[in-house]
Image (cartoon, rainbow over all chains, first blue to last red; front, side):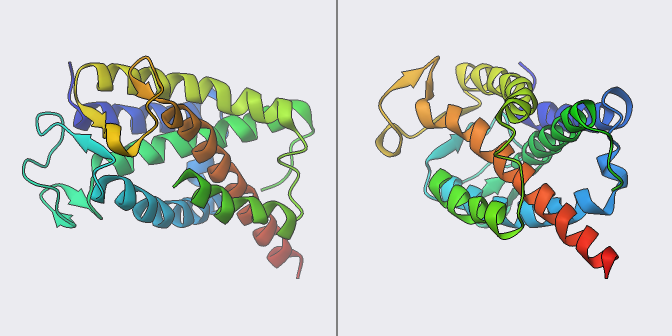
Length: 113
Length: 98
């Protein structure tokens, strides 16, 4: 089984390739996406910090970069959560937004962005 | 946590006059394939012990080893992302119009 670290990196790559080459939505080249992602990632740190800081979700040391107890910052963790979660969240939200824009372009005439 | 995300993002819909929720089929078409992909990943990772969910802090009801709210996660988070993206689109086009 590949580690969460590797899987998360692959997910980011797949999401960006889907955005640029498959769906051709090119969100990663738009300022709108990066502004939206900036907002999303702030809230991810809050909500994911809640889930991981309280131990609602727990990770195996073998799967992530971090290796010790859950700390707020350091040892491969940001706001209690493994840094891999940032890649997971980026890929999930980018794919969702790209799919959303793609379905919109297919149901209505494309809008300028 | 999921309720917090919805409380924080659903008002964007009214505030910015978004039409995301008025297109349920488009929303389904965008969210379902992505959710399916990430749920498959989640199932495999949880099954191989890469992560697990505290039974004391999640619903007892499980499906494929994941608590039910984990499935809701893959609807709520993409929806929140799309609402944020659409709100930013509206704000930016308003600014350009001025």
